[in-house]
Structures are given as C-alpha cells and as structure tokens.
Length: 310
Figure 1 (cartoon, rainbow, N blue to C red):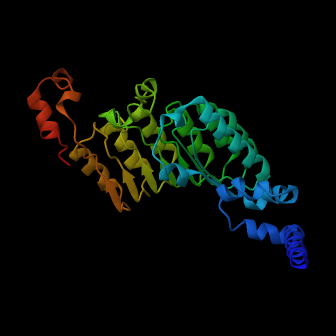
Figure 2: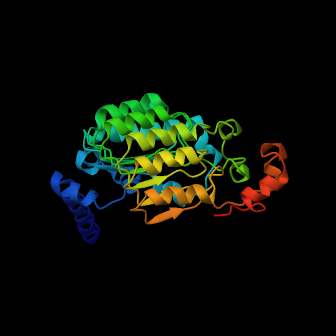
C-alpha cells in the first residue's frame, strides 16, 4: 500500500511540475515540435497548454506543403469540405499569429481565408497557394495591397487568377524575387483524370502572353520564374527576357508554343541565367489535329516527330 501511495504521489508531483512550467519555458519546448504535433497533441493536454500553443511566436510560419507532398493526391482534396478545413486552419493561424506570420505554404484554400490573411499579415514574405480553385483576383489584389514585403509567390494551378493580379503584385511588391505560375498538364491530362475535376482541367488559362507581358513589365527584379505548361508564345517569352534581366532560373517545361529558336533568342538577353528548363515534352499525335498546323509535314518540322527539337 505504501509503495502504491508513493507511486501515486510521484505521478502527481510530475504532472504538477509540467503544469507549473513558465509560459516562456513551455513556449520554447513547443517551438521544437511540428505544427501537426502541436495541433494533435499538446493543444489537448490542458487549458494552459492550449493557451501557450496559440502564442504568436509559434506562428511565423504556416507550412502544410510537406504534408501534401508526402501524400498521394486525392480527389477529396478538391472537395468543398476539404477546402473548408484548410480555410479554418488558415484563419486560426492568422488570428493566433497576431501579425507575425511571414510564410504561408498551403493548398486548396479559398478567397475566404486568404482575404483574412491579406488583411492581418503585413509582414508576409512567402505565399504558396497551389491548387486553389476558388482563389480569385479579389484576394490576390488584397495581398498585393497589404503585403508589400512579399518575396516569393506560388500561384500554380490557380486558374481564377489573371494577369491583372500579376500586374498589381509587380507594382506593389518590389521585393518579389520568386514567381511560380505553373499550369496542370493540359497536353496530356491523363495523370490528373479522376483526381482534378474535369471542368477545372478544361478551364486552363489561355492568356499566356498577357501574363508574360505583366511579368516582363512589372517584375524586373525576378530571379526565379516557373511557367510550366504556359501557353505563352515567342512574343511572351521576349517580353520576359527583355523585362527580367536578373533571371537566374527559368522553367518552361511543357510550353508547347515555343521553339528552339525562341529559347536561343531569349537566352541572349538573360546574361545571369544559370538554369533553363526547356519545353521538352512528349506529345502523342492523337492530342493534335492535322488542321492545327495545316498538315503533318509542318507538324513534324516543328516538333521533330512528337518531340520538341530543343
């Protein structure tokens, strides 16, 4: 009995020691945990720990990208229910950060949460919101107006964002150095079937040259640019090469309207370019119709029998 009583007293004393940790000490400990570990574990321990888990110092970065990358993409990610969950998480983090949030890396959010982030995160430097089917110019315009310190922007696979947003981002965010505006593979979309909604796949932006013009005119300090599967032509690429002389990395994979000559002409203007990802991409003949280029001989001259000559 005495041994049992002693064991119970030790357990009580141990629990008491944890509960009596100072806020600063507990914050230091929690900062060593991942976001998932804090949300699923420590927040549920007691009220004092829940309060500490909401300390603004723990929310300078909100990064879910590693979770998305480690999993297999699911059609559920594109559902309204999943979008609401991501929105709720982002809104909570924005509130708890008290303006300290500097980096957001998520997917499948909407204007509802992003507009909130724009209004309450003046120190935001990194914004990555890939695959957000309900993020529009409305919230990006708010980001441009309220987050002038932005250095990196990834709006890949966000089809409701237009060249107008790119123009305003360029005007209002002079520190922008990294822009990622990749599109889903529209040439051979088979890899996305059954996951991405068909109507979204068919809504691929067509204004590649308008976006390129906005980038070239209003983002002269860019160093890293990704435009995978963009529909820009030689004219658009020329706008970029003339307007963004500091580019060190340029990814044009899958840009089917560009030729080897276009790439060579652009490279002449980009003296600082260290890495150029060319549009090399296998294109099944079934994807194209002969009338697109007039006849198969012209098609073969341009693509060298299904493969870009680059």
